[in-house]
Image 1 (tube, rainbow over the protein chains, first blue to last red):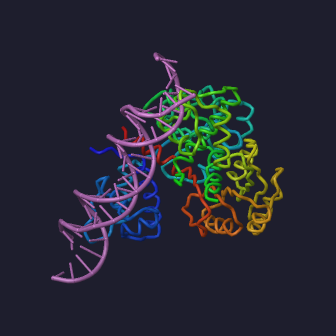
Image 2: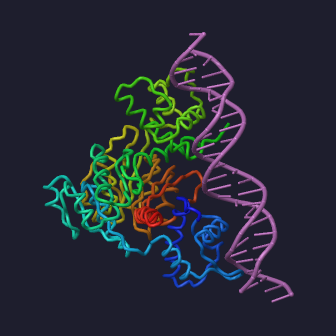
Length: 209
Length: 209
DNA sequence: TAGATTGTTAATCGATTAACAATC
DNA sequence: TAGATTGTTAATCGATTAACAATC
């Protein structure tokens, strides 16, 4: 069996989003060319990806939007409900918490938020349960939290990541501008560093001048 | 002349960050192997990148930290001062604004923030100058703002991006979960979509189960 | 049947890694 | 000189794109 690589997962995640929108607009069928335009890919890449995950359309006919979306969802678990938490409730963490809740993704439940500052926990108003940082492993394990969003200062990032791994998360989204080590190989991480993104953008324009 | 590709820019941006840290720690010289470990790359990739941007070390000797950092900075414009602005001052935008200011990057000046809601502009406390959204082009042009961080709702994203292009930015960091078109080819964009990131993380663990 | 559009292989392209030559 | 480590080419790997065969 062929392993599904990261580029495929990323494209499929976006394709799924597009199909969801088409379904809302009640479009029933769609060609690989259209999907290519909507996702910014070559039509041939779209077909290859769809073929690769094992879905069969029918020659000459377009893809069935509903069916394709549902096959992709099943294959990648996009409709499986996941629990998530946020660690670090400074300005960024609090905003991300509200942001995720506001997005109202039906498959994503935000079930806990942590901060090391007990005073801060008392002043924050949210519908999500709040805990002190020393309870990270325990709460993650008990609530079976799969995803952790980390927005803590650089100095605590590695420790928090370790505790998330111990608790048993399967994915970490890291906003701290530091490269962290994962103590478990079954945990994956994606990072976002604002300063780094802005530096890359400015380098691109600098180079093309 | 060989064109510098995106992967190279991304690696160099991080390498620069690492070299800056080494300089703070007063480490004078460093091998490609060490740099590889610190950046998560192969030593051979590090050497190839350094070679590619035209820097020459000396055989047998390690790289001079200060010199290498300064060459990279000059080549990619990392120390050139850039002006930036934020558009959209909801929970996420406001947090990003504080976040960037708190990061205190010496080469990045946050000089303006915009929102379409005039009432909101009056309640926000910040040291940055605030403007209504209808002045985006004018202010970007007048202050020669190079980078725009966009945190507006999906429905306004495309319009805001167009106005940033008209104003003359060279880079856009987009937090709206939508693919936007750029009307100018000399503007680059990078996007971050929280829901999408979480979906990708959860798919990775789903697939490896 | 002819037209449309998918399925699938082959070709290309680009990026990474391995190997080792160069030389301080 | 020998050892260390960079510079640089060649080999590999993987991903994308082109081409066209398949067939509804």
